[in-house]
Image (cartoon, rainbow over all chains, first blue to last red; front, side, top):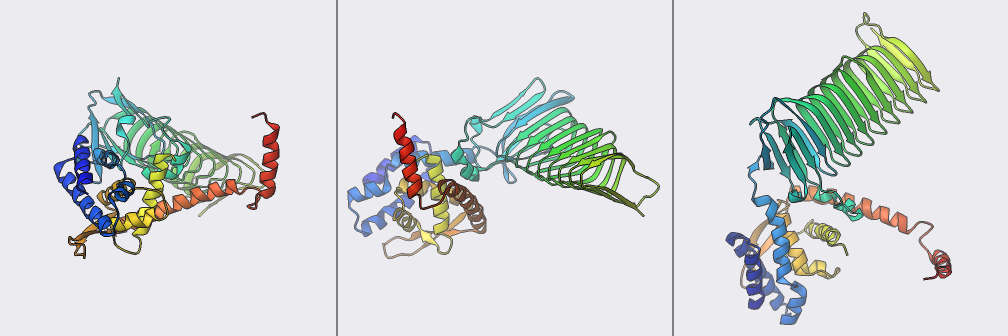
Length: 319
Length: 123
């Protein structure tokens, strides 16, 4: 028993585990080894049952590393900051499974915070030539890790209150939340993750999703292009001065307080339901998808430019 | 077995053990190693990490072995984590079984046909 503890102590020291933690781990093992002896296990049985002490130390090191060295900020830990000396900047974000939130920083710098235990050293976090680049480790995820999405980690990326010329977001399974930013051109692709975009002033927006649900609120844009397969979309208080193009297979659109230029709705079976929805004109191309609009302002008629549908229809009521 | 995958399974087992009962470390290790071929050196680091992450709390209780035992108790956060992990596992393993059982569970005829096909190859 003592020999095991001695070895364990040596291995823990080798891994630079702090004294306090080491004492705790040793006392846990003392307790467990005592139980084993009480049970009548021989020295050899104990060896088999407890295994190699060096492995315990390695595993423990791997799990304490990330959490202890970075300052805690709320529920997150601060990993990195970048200064942004220029008036504007751009960014490209490529995540796989990570949830991510984007918002304004108080410090005026770019701040990268995380939750969970991402293998940070395998990520790219780079700020060069006024461009922020973040991407997840590639070729890390094997098929098995589908189940291991429990190792899901989250990031919070805080940005200075400056114009972001172009922002490109990619994800597969992560949920994204983008808030309070001024973005020139915003492009986003996501497969399964849900998306929330709020309080954004922008020019061109191009959103591509497959299954994820999307919530857009308080958005001002000059152009909005939206494409989804089966994700449902809710728009709330959205003002698009130019065209608003939608492509959906079965995803439904729900628009509340939305104004836009020409609206083109292309669907298979997805429906578009508008309340206080005022496009300059509207076109429908669908198999069975319908457009229905309920407005209160009858002095703003909606021009139907085109309707090509097998069984879908456009229904506009105003009172 | 892929060690990360294995770790995920052990994590689920540790959480599951503590669903209805507080337990001390040695007891958890005994219960799991009764069914799975894993050592203390795999289970303990997981137990410790789950505790650090707030999924378990611990308390000491006097025992008949001379020194107090450290008991692990699942927190509400731990329960939520267990439930999400369990869902993922069920979904994953359900998918695996759907693939394995394609064409029926009683696979005698399937195995025979596979054997015939395998004999046709040179290796």
